[in-house]
Structure formats: C-alpha cells, structure tokens
Length: 366
Image (cartoon, rainbow, N blue to C red; front, side, top):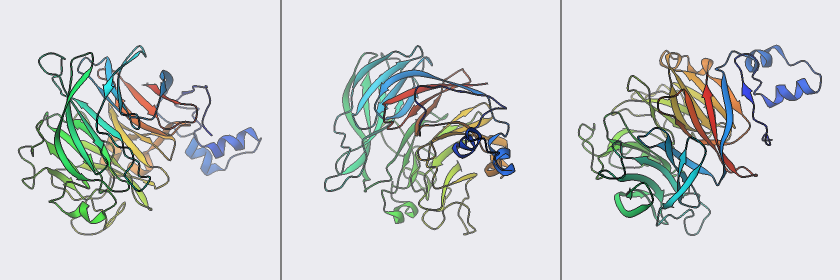
C-alpha cells in the first residue's frame, strides 16, 4: 500500500523499507535476525519531499542546460512540461503522432524519453529530442523549443519495430555529445542478437539520426543483446550504466561498453555463455528497475514493481559485489522517471500511475 500524504526522511540508521518488517513491528512481533539485518542496514541518508503534484504518469525528466529546470514527458497524454526547481510547471506543448496503444491489442506505448540538445539556449539552438511510439513503430524525433512552446516535428530515426511491449525509450546525450537511445526488442527476442537491427540495443547517433562516428559495427548500434533497457546514466569517469527489465528470472544493471553483447535472449542475469557480458547488479524480476542516475560515487535506480529507490556503490558494482551492496533508500510508490539535478546532490523522481495522481519528488542525498 502506498503512503498517502506522508513524506518520510530516510536516515542512515532508522530506515525500515520492508513492509513485512514494518508490519511485524507494529504488531509487537520481533523480526527475524535476517530481516532486521537487511532492513536496518546502513543506508544513504535522503530527504524526500514533494516538489510538484498533479502529474499523469511522468515518464522522463531531463534537465535543460540552466540546471534549474527540466523537461518532463507524460506517457499517455503526450504532454511536455517545463518544471522549475521551485515546483512550478508550464505546459510547453504536445508531441504529435503519439499512439499509446497498438491497434488490435492493449500494448502500452506512448511518449517516452526526452533529451534537450546539450547546447540548447532557446535561440541559436532550439533542438529537443523525443522518443515515442506510433500505431506501427517506435521513433526518435526532433522538435524546436524556443523557451515558450514546442514546434516543428522531424523524424530522425524511424522504423524501430513496435511489438506488444518492451519499447525501451530512454534517450540521453553522452559526454561525447552524441545521442544514446535505449531500444527494446519489441517482444521479438531474436532481434536483440541481430547487429543489423535497431531493436534490443543501445544506439549511438548524431542529431540528424545517422550512426555516430566510431560505432563498433558501422551502423547505429553501440551495444546489443538487450531486452528492455529503460535507464541510461554516466558516472563522473564517463562510464555508461543502464537499467534493464528482464523476462522471468532477473532484472539487471549493466555497465555498457562499446560493442558488447549483453546476452538476451540466451542469458538473463549471470551466465557463462562465451561472448556474453554479465550484469553488475541483479534483482529478482519482481523489481522492474526503470531508470538510473548517478550522485557522487553511487548509482540510484528507480523501480516500478519493487516500489523502491535503490542505491548501489559504484566501486562495489565494479568489483562484482553489487548484489550484496545494494540498499533500499526509499519505498512506497511505483517509480520510473529519475534524473540528477546538475550541480547538486539531489534527484528528481516521478511516481508512476498512482491511484491518487502522480507527483515529482525531490530527493536530497546527504
């Protein structure tokens, strides 16, 4: 059950994120030693407060170069807002041609990721990029934003297969100024291993949608063997991390390397198949890790089914100890949209399809 109007400071000593343990305490029972050790383990101190309310399934948050405001996409409505750090928001427009459902079934798609150009200023550079589904495909598009409203619509990369699910959808500019695109395999698992397909991949492209120089296979593909990656973030050493939702066994946090094969559909989680790259962190498939952000030396991962925000020390993940080092720092809502605030030890995080309406949360990392 979600919290209703109560916002909790999660401290390093007294965070109880297990609903089972919490229920036991309220009933006067003593939790097991194992549960107590897990639930009361030292965790990063975070303050969680409401930043903005009245949202409808915010899918992505991406900061403008000013670092004080971000563009936020709403999944089903196709609306795009500019959200400021004082919590005020302005509707700047809708992305056209968005289709949430595929004809003949109930497949969820809609408006997904957003990425302003790294040099956006609303004058000389007005470019903002989106990923969304149509009735027949997924695509990456470019629009213009002059600081007041969206205009124009240009498809820069179309033809991504749309299946009944597994759209991927996160887009982000990397430190190299190229656009990275996380694509799902659209329920056609074999496409993930096809290096000539743009599905089940992390792509690296130019602002015009062409393959970026230096890609490993001479096409759009940067890495392959992905099922449904929805998170992309770089740490301060320029390493790319991606959160990925698995099938029935394991969900993953992967360290993405140029040309690497991440195993799907041959592997889910860790495996010993030659040529496959194992994840750095895994969860049971009841978690559904959605997006990832980096604050200092830690990765933060939102989760849809797990209703938690996770913290993973980067050093532990690199050393192969990520599974034992991951901790829960917030719980109570299905969480997807996640972004670090530039220049601050702070995250903005969106709830997903909450019965009382969604909100953007401010998470200050201590």
